Length: 318
Length: 318
Image (cartoon, rainbow over all chains, first blue to last red):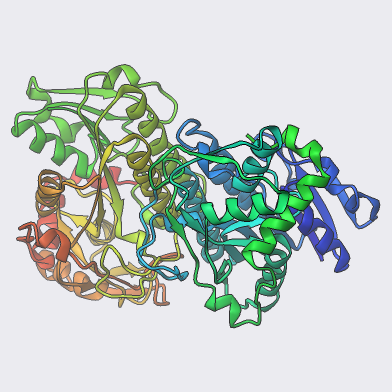
């Protein structure tokens, strides 16, 4: 199939690029390289089935790129939930409006399938834990979650209006090679500079579920191959949760340090942070998907990658 | 209090203008008059506590209007669910982006309360009927619903991020004086031209709940006065439903005609139409609100208004 993949040079997008090309698809990867890294695509670029186009999905036209495309994987996004309060326009533009631009182009060019990378943040402070896809209608607590739920609504409305089959994945935080923002990255970077002290947002007791990038990519693959509805909506996460403190413990033992912990305090790391994110994945499990990595293994895999890719520390996402 | 009311010259907005002024508030009404009508404000404009500013909330700046405002009532919207498919940008701009512009201005100017007119359409094809506010997370089936749920998400995220107290009302269709779009308007206009035949979208069996404008305004008043949470979310509707065929029967008996009915067919009037909208209003009922008009009374009140305001027939919303 011919695939347009947005955010191709990002953490998830670059892994997906490799996977899709290895499955025999023709992939056009696009990215504005604002946070994506062309280095992540070095292997994919060796393959004739992969082409890369640098463009901005908000300001540039891209209709001609998708005239023959069968499926759009929309993975470009502002992926950091933490900075919504200080940059309230960014989530709306990069997550909601860019998704609308893509849907409009898909409609005009007759693209028949649309895959969207959403987030467990759309559940806000969930009333049910673990949270299933059809949990009580949530109230948005972050601009990031709001911008993603807005995009989800557009995707599904376009499915109804124009028959574009959609696949929406709500992820927990993803870890593994090429991970370049979030708490493991921040902690490792801090400890690399000074192993004696570690600044921690919140009280360290926030609990999250983390998924390894390879499990994530496998889940997306299964969801798309086996999801047969007009709108296919799946949670992707592990059956476990890990507190920030437990995560710190795994990191410190792995790299061999025991810093003093300096908590900013409160039960949330930032405004709009959820003290507990744990998704019910029974729906995708029923299709045969189970993650292979434990959270601890995912954390160690991430740290090992950072150890061998110090260049990333100087250029993490902000 | 000092109030900014958007969509002030619209159906709901103009009734709200009168109510708020009569309660002793200072009201700045804004409207771009794209579908609003200055005639609807003729009484309000006689009052020194009401001022009107014609402006476009998408393209114009309006910060200076709200420097001293205590509360924003955001009722400007593209209010017609039916045309989403043919005009896919309109809902996104007029409903989602304009709401974001207003929230940004509210944040900059320190406005402490934000009232938002949402819709029962956010429930899509609801899994629970009557549908409570915390029903299972719905899938959007119309661009209108998607644009409103997107705006709701932004409003609540701004509540969390900046402490702006919010009041969101999810309405069924509203009827009564000044009603100028939707099925009663369309049917009356058709019958006025030719009482022998009536074109009906769908199979006439779609069932909806309708609320009289006076009951709606009363519900908003109670919700705002008694809702004490940071985010206050209320359904507003009646405990009854009425099929399109029953509605036709009421209209025809009232004006004395018996047309042949020409159905377009199917269980939906348009793409994204819900065959049944019926909201659970237990939450606002618990605060003491009960609607006074039956659906039949609301239909008759609407027809009577149209009979005495034929000018509106030539200028209905499209």
